[in-house]
Image (cartoon, rainbow, N blue to C red; front, side):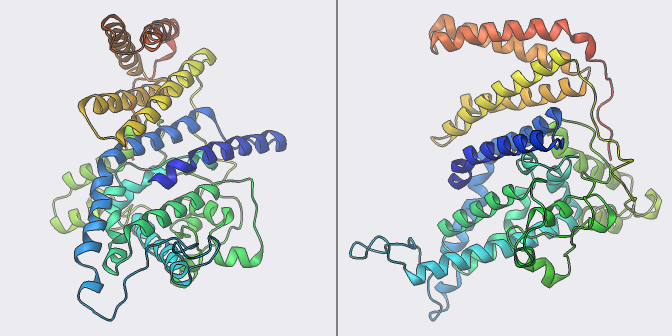
Length: 436
């Protein structure tokens, strides 16, 4: 969405301001490994979005064009699809178009209403939770967590917005309203803001309300689903106020920084449970029932245990400082490459762009392996850097790209390999992250 892309500078500015607040107050609210994992999940989500936007937005446009009620019910008016201000060449630029204002306001509220149900079902239906769980895996709570988005969940939850297409909402109103909804949600992923005024807390989803939503404490789970407005939670019985600061994360910690594993681990566990369950009814309930439900043969339903900030141990494997710098630099390069890929994708997809996207994903997985001190990161990173160096050298010799970039790629790959092999002894962890 163009609205989200336009807000990216705002996102990073707010993250910097939050870090400055953290330093000034002495409250440690973020860690490098966790923040890079959050951003890696966000980058992966954007990479996948290159390919699924045509499906999700295309379906909305098709339904709005062919199935909207205005095509069959003559007295239902079409939605105005024009700017709020101006409204025509003869109108003053500051003149307010009342019908357009009402349409945009209704679209904004209705998008949040649909978001509420999409979000709620993503917590109450296991297969939808498998696609949404990525956003809740961080054991911190800060603005970078807001960028920790799932790659698979969007392919399952877009159907919750189709009623808006059926009532004839123009896709432009939907796209902008949905984008503004997500930008607002970014701003409430922070511990820098306490509780706000009584009226604000009653109507809007605030940082306090959303901290509760991310809490792993049993009394906080499955509450506060709203995006912008908290009134839907109050109406439908899913509201919970903040009583003490939550413990953040999921009931069975991921214990990995890998964005690929973050998106797949619940699906893998679900497939294993289905395979070990003989009754088809139980199999369907594993997939479409509430998260944590299991038949008696697998031990019965799981209940979340009580947690406290004093006893909760965060996943935080120590990494030598030079290796951490190596991981940060590799991530920074992958992030720049992802921006270039996303910008090029607006002009169309081709094999070269797909290859570049694949390279970014492999780089993100390698960075995760480095911060996990995983043994598999050594051959993966070696192969990736060798491939990068060879490809850069070929482009330099053939003149396929500017010499500064290609020879820079050769030097970067070579220096990175030297650092990796100098500290390869720190990559000793053999096991992959445990299944739930």
